Figure 1 (cartoon, rainbow, N blue to C red):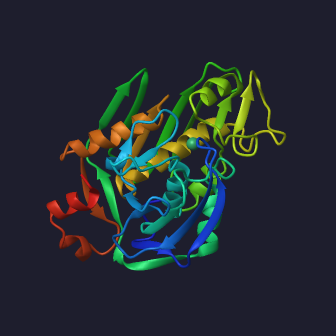
Figure 2 (cartoon, rainbow, N blue to C red):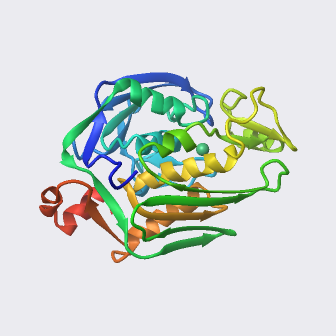
Amino acid sequence: MLGDMTTASQQTLKNPIGCRGVGLHSGRKVTMTLLPAAPETGIVFRRTDAGAEIRASWVNTIESPRCTVLSNGEGITIGTVEHLMAALAGAEIDNVTVELDGPEVPIMDGSSAPFLFLIECAGVVEQDVARRAVKVLKPVRVVEDGATAALLPDHGFSMNLEIDFANPLIARQDICVVFDAATFKSELSRARTFGLLDEVDRLRAAGLGLGGSLDNVVMVSGDHVLNAGGLRYADEFVRHKLLDAFGDLYLAGGPIIGRFHGVRSGHAHTRHLLAALFADPEAWCYTSLGRATDLGALDRQDAMRLSGA
Ligand SMILES: [Zn+2]
């Protein structure tokens, strides 16, 4: 997604567009509207039912067991943002306001494809300001609970991920993806959320997965899939986990130039990885993907403020 094949200008939507669906964990019906936004706005979520706005940044995330949750620090949260964030990252949308009338982004079919379709239907326009990427300058690593997540310096953006489940169908899968403009749509966007049938009762008892069904979750029981259509990719599980990490990484505030490496990592590890990256001023810098003059005017303090770091 970086280099010759990417846009050098910030982008937003040409027209507003919306959809309605159910929240995976809350089980609540929610209407979502994506609205065009001015350059340098970033991705901003707006809870119309609660009168709150929360910027999509790693600094606004909170600990949550199953999905990525943004919080305004005053009790207003927005859950399950990762699949929408992945679609926005894949479509290279820098500026958009996401209106919701409930506490969770609708799960749709469990993948990013419906969101990508919405973005394509709305249309994408370039804005007259250079895109800003976060360039990784030295390796940063988080090792927790037998999982590893790392960012390493590289010329473009690539990701590799390994998963290892104590389930005979999922088991051990790995994937390596080098991103260009078409990669996300073809290789990752259709990969759905999955769950193990054994875990459903425990999840529901914890008040999670209340909106889950075979329409939005790949349900695995032993060595087979319960969904009538089977899998969309032979290795859909690891592709979905990569989609999650891709969406979570967009909470950096822009595209990343570097290589992501994950082993059994999940939302919390990606989140802690971004915190570790931004905690070390020598580990990253901003770089303009367009005309250098736009960023030349920014000093480091401005840059830190814009990133929320
Ligand atoms: Zn997911």
